[in-house]
Amino acid sequence: MASDDITPPIGNILVVDDHRRARESMADILMHAGHEVHCCGSAMEALAKLQSWPADVVLTDLKMPGMTGLELIQALAERQIDAQVVMVTAHATVASAVTAMRYGAFDYIEKPFSIDQLENLVSRALRNGESHRQQSHVPACGSACDQVAMIGSSVAMRTLRHRIAQIGPTAETVLITGESGTGKELVARAIHLASKRAETTLVGLNCPALSPQLMESELFGHRQGAFTGADSSRVGRFELADGGTILLDEITEIALPLQAKLLRVLQEKTFEPVGSSTSLRVDVRVLATTNRDLLGEIRAGNFRQDLYFRLAVLPIHVPPLRERPKDIPELVEYFLRRAAIRLEKPASQLDADALQLLLHYHWPGNVRELENIITRASLLGDSLITASELRDWLLDVPGRIPSSGAPPTPPASIEVGMSLQVMERKLIEATLAHYDGHRAKTAKALGIGIRTLANKLRGYGYGPRAKAFSRAA
Image (cartoon, rainbow, N blue to C red; front, side, top):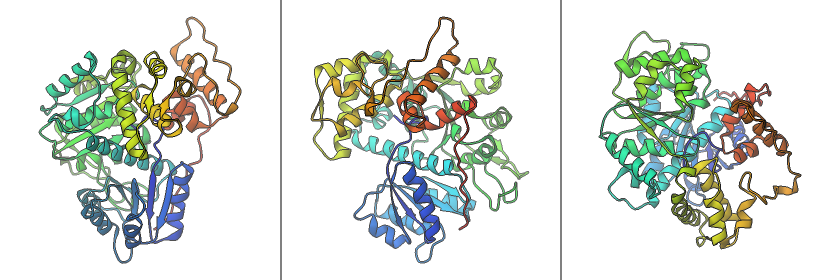
């Protein structure tokens, strides 16, 4: 299930840039993140490469000799090449950004940018492509829920689908709540597809991925010269979503000062880009997600109450997997079929003991954790997957053997009356120690995103990783 609050996905990335150092710099960053990366020095070379190597994401520069980045995006669309396209440019303008989106680009990024910005954008592009493939693998049944593969016949899932059918056709703002990994973004997509805006754009923004300084520009855009480094204008997500829907993923990450400006957009449908005194009016339906207790955030002074009431016009809750174990066999079967298609091999099967193990597991990472485990077992296991193969990948399961032969980390001590915040910190630090400080492995084991882990560690006083990356065209 897609969301940006998960371990970053891995994919095939094609970097297209006529400047050798620029493309090699991007390739180094993405290979370090675990992706398989190929480079091309021209758009024509990229088109030839894509005939024999299936890229999940194409990163293309805008200004290149011969065929430009925009022309490459158009050529990919005409050839129906199934890849998410991201335009990389130091010459971004509102016109070029909108044109790229119109031709089918997923997003664009403007130089100079940080390592985290590039990694996060590629992760979002991979998840967007995976969501589209999920839709194509599920037979159309005439409903938005079928199109986004919302699997499950439990009472909880039937209630959720009914709720989506009720609120989808309206134009009202929707607040989607639920734990990490439950599929809040899929619910948002289903709501969009059930609306009268289904043929228009659904523009997403992963709020935790941006600093407060970048958030306002990302939401509302900025004009050239608005701040240091603003060498050109940039269109914001609300402007891109005009006439369609915007999804604000994990909206509690938006800082308090910016919440007031967001409230105004919800109330009046107008805003000013950074550095502009001219108001823009947009027709946008807002969907927002959160995995936090918003009322608790309001009491703590972290979230505006008036914004909450504007967002929660139509609230919808996505139940955790542990509350709907009846859906696990259906989900397992679905993920086994999907893994077989992706791996180009016959679908594996689970033996009875393996299924019972999954049915009695507590699923802290919810459906996303189940999908990751089934995919891993399909790749690494035999045609018949046993309980012993799965047990090592589940957290806190009796008989679990530590991977890689590493000695087990002593469990974090838990005392009666200990606060949830302290318990969480102890669990994170114990897991981090078990994986020798490897943050990606720690995030994966905990069922949270690498960005979420980094934010929590920063709050505990751990030093941030180096992330400066700046280059000229």
